Length: 115
Length: 114
Image (cartoon, rainbow over all chains, first blue to last red; front, side, top):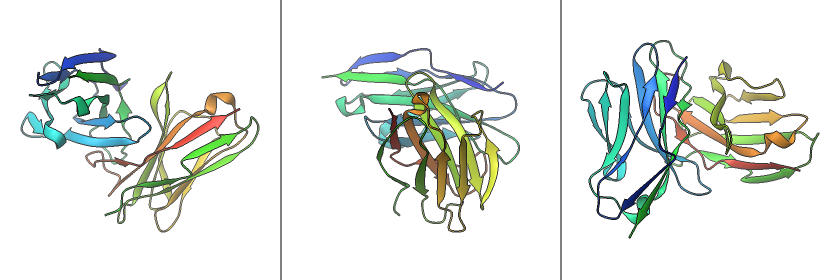
């Protein structure tokens, strides 16, 4: 069965420091991986995705993610955190093959950036 | 382009009632998916529609249903509401139904069942 794990419920970072939000996945076939961010009382905003090719994916707001096939991971990173990055982050996978496109989400990681 | 819109934004219903939520996708998008978000279960897939056909369905009881119209707008209906149906219901649209496509989410409808 397909699954996504976000091992940390919360990540605390000081403003200006690098941040990492972890994600691992379990899927048969080629994984298509996504990161979304959710601010309070809002829907999900798309940050970036990995389909194929370069393992380092760059996305919105200075975020990037590194796909590691051997470790089945897709960690979200940012070199310098901002207070405004504080939000709930979701990793999601959509298994490759076929035409049906539903996302399987991790439980989410709350990122808190302190000034 | 305007984003995904969902109406209403907030709803309060009582047990046993039914509710209909509406979603208008991004112009040109033909696929609409619905998700339920709760603190306990997280984000769970309900169903996906593409060109007025349900292409995929999650593990929810038959009380949850949906449809898509020829203009790609979608509605979901929940009958015989239960307290556990209280959740944020999110609609997402994408240009096609492929797994590589990015799904863009609306702001959600917050349903409270009393």
